[in-house]
Image (tube, rainbow, N blue to C red):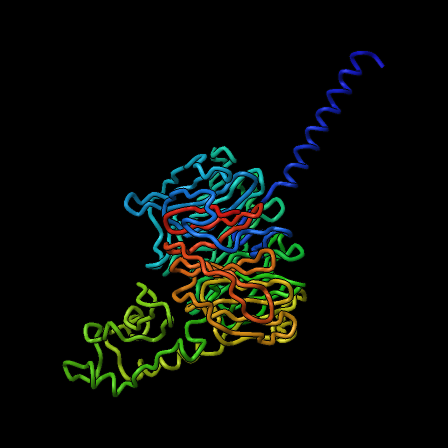
Amino acid sequence: MTKHQYIIQAALIGALLLIYSANTTRANEPIWPQFRGPNGSGLAAKGQNPPVKFGPEQNVLWKTPVPSGHSSPCVWGDHIFLTGYTKEKKELQVFCIDRSSGNIRWSRIVPAKQIEKVHPVGSPAAATPATDGERVYVYFGSVGLLSYDFAGKQQWTVPLPVPRTRDGHSTSPIVSGELVILNGDEPNDPYLLAVDRHSGKTVWKQTQSSSELRATSHSTPVVWEKQLVIHLGDELVAYNAADGTRIWSVSINTRGTSTPVIGNNVLFVGAWTNLGEPDLRVKLPDFEALVKQYDKDGDMQISKSEFPDDLMVAHRPEIGNVEGGQVYVKPYFQMVDLNQDGLVHEIEWEGVFDFLSTFSKDHGLTAIKLGGSGDITITHVLWQEKRNVPEVPSPLYYDGRVYMVRNGGIVSCMDAETGKLLYRERLGAAGPYYSSPIAAHGRIYIASGKGTITVFAAGDTLQVLARNELKEQIFATPAVVENKLYVRTVKHMYAFGE
């Protein structure tokens, strides 16, 4: 072999070693790459041991002010990706935090012609970023899908129509193989979108079923054996990840608010409706009582000006006086006034009771055996727990049990195989719950909307280990990487560790 050939061979070997080293480093990098970590499971990597007790003055590694937003931390290596929204300037933002120091690595303003309408307690920066280790993918309902490299350079943009929803669109993108997937559910044009992660070009777009009565889904897709499973407004559907074709479905009474989890080839979904349980419903007066109290001009009809502002049809118990937390009839006056004459007649009011009865069926945490084709509602639903179902938080599958937490800090634990209720108790942290539970080192971490993170032992009985007060509202779901707990409040990003 000549000297020149030796040099070429050495260069090739060196290049291969560099590639191997880079791939090995990437494979070993600590990650929490999307909403609730790998495949939305909420499970920390094996062996992770984050602190049990922490707070603003205990076990704080760093604390960084961040813009308002509900997106959860997305972690790859030494990078934490988040989104934010500055209400005063009406500015959307993508930013990256150095995971070691808490310093802001970079921040990018995302221009928007208009800001989507959101729930009073919602945020235009609700979707959690997703990453594949090369780029980060971000969704804003006000803009569309965007891609950035790890240095903050924008790679591509996929403009999408602003969702015409009542409460905003809080689904998060995911990465599946070479595709970035987005659940673009909205009332008039629901779709499932797959774009090439390198170019942003549409690979396929699948139209989903729609109806005027179906609620808009806020769920993030999960992946099972090359299938994309999505919790929609009245059904659970699996699509082929390669081309978006529909594979199977389960009909279910739900508003599609939470993301399912998978354990042992069973999918667990929190099928919630705001009329699903007795304590969520408010009894409406019959027409005679309605007229007697509110018909001011004596024409035996109720005009919009006469209609009471405070007539409630459903409520969220135990969350306090949260703006937008109750469901009143008057905003739906036009739907009640079927002939659009500006008045509610007796027949129209009776129709309200008929309409509500279709939504008053029991909801529940539902276990579904994965697989099959077509409508598998009868054959694959294993069990259902119908009480104390969360509105927003997703369920957690961990070590053969399923956990869920409802407003008021009511936690339920079920045997994952049989659905047997092992316990239902209060955590001792009241208020609304928006964050989803996560698990690490035999412990469950659940954050309340008021800012209390309760840590309790996984098991057949409730054993609370700590209640940690952060003294700021929490909407985001925490992340666990390298024995550290990362928590986003409405004002700060925290890193906790021992």
